[in-house]
Image (tube, rainbow, N blue to C red; front, side):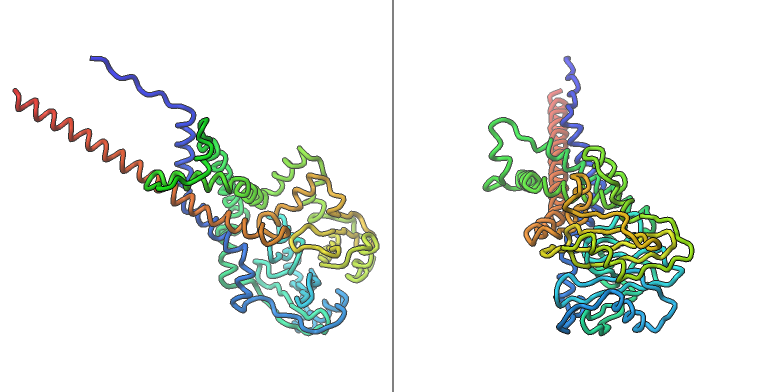
Length: 428
């Protein structure tokens, strides 16, 4: 009796198995990443709707100098032991200014920023952009101030509440140190792998291209889930890959920056901007924040002050952020690096003069959080998080239905064999 030859497994079969089991094994954490990411896109908008946003600055007039803001913040805390480490003007009229204060023993723990600004993950270096808010480390304060009247509007000890919960879950899975951030990065890599393998598995045969982009009318069961999985995947693929690539960058900034610079040569933005060091000058009086701002503005006279991060060690540079008229929140800002001892500018990072590689790196955080490119892009980034649970549900149901049908077929085959065997015994 001839025996059937074993069926040869194709590359497509093994890739399909790989795609399936990566999705099933990581189903829950990937869904969690998608949902938390979608919530964070509109997190601050939700805060304002709930009355939990920043207080409004109502005084009318010219904004006060950064040095005056710092003095007002120091006087409001009543704690002479705190030192200023950052100060920020608003981006728009009606928003508060902010000053960040820390204790000397915490001075190396640089402030975190709110609202998806560019901040290299893997360090506590401050981000570019909007409001310096609470770092995850206890003991630091953010003082919100009316930039005109110098009235203290609010003093915050730390970011708390539901938004902090989503931020910590999405950013590092509540795991302290770099391990949680790296795990999140590898989940991003898994999503990129699923996107690439999904594109290969979706690729239609000749004559089936139109159907591959749509959900067939009247589709039910397995066909419906397959069409929904494939159509949503191909229509969202470019954005899906972009958002997840930027997420991987935020977890592995040094590695991704090196890869980008290998293709498009440029400066190491992360090291030059956030880890700038200077040679201490013995006996030199440290530069005041207002003097540092004046030096920065002399370099870029068509820009105005946004934020400053002060030197907290003798070998540390001062960083001043500037923006030009028409600046969109989230877009890269001008950063001027200043030697506080010699009181001179040592470097300028201007988006207008950045190389292609430097611009790609500078936009990573904004692209990931959906800021700097308008409301339509922000909504699309939100959608890129929402569709991950859709992929998970449709993928799981496809697997489950196939598994159920396969088992039903095996039971039917066994029943036929048993029936045939019984019939043969009766004939004997």
